[in-house]
Length: 264
Image (cartoon, rainbow, N blue to C red; front, top):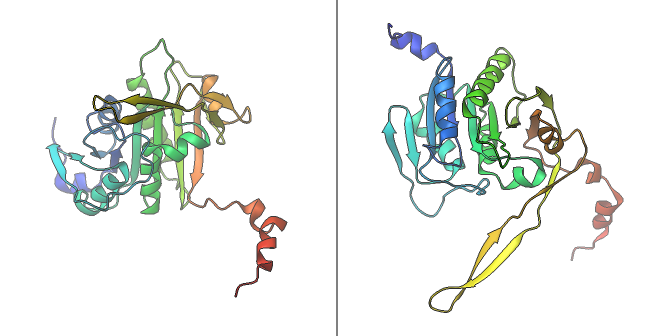
């Protein structure tokens, strides 16, 4: 097979992959293998798991990006750090897409989206003007993750987006249940209500320490929300936006009452 020329390679679509599970996670590896069929693919991801870290940036110590193999970089930082380093250091231009994932576990509902490093990386890409998607895999207790069919589905999503534009300041959150899936549904965010656990223990020196647990979430919210659709075997595609303003409350009596405060 003949290799493309440098000129041909420079014209090929460029996709940046990151995650919060680590640069060698089977989810990101499967996605890279599949997307190389249609694009130049770079992986710039944390050097270890950094789940539930949201949009944290490393500001108090230097970061390192180690090239582990061609087009693969392991960063000793957060998912958001990885997006910065990829855009400013690794890549020669803005990628056509940033895909964060595939995450080993769901990112469904308002709570997951707020904590998730996977979703935060897509948000960071959107801040930088990159069309961005977060992709998460869901599995039941009795099944393994379906990496290959999920990766093929993501490729088909990218192909379907060809020639179209994700609106500025909008990014997509995609959750894929175990295969066979029923199809895709456009959804709103729902809720997964957790009963958080706090486990208190003593170390060998008698000092107290804690483990924060999350328990088993219960699906809540509208039946057309991402949580319920994925439970019923549908792939959920939820558009998210940077603007978190609560517009229904913006001109409410509640907030207008604050305008009467006398400032001395």
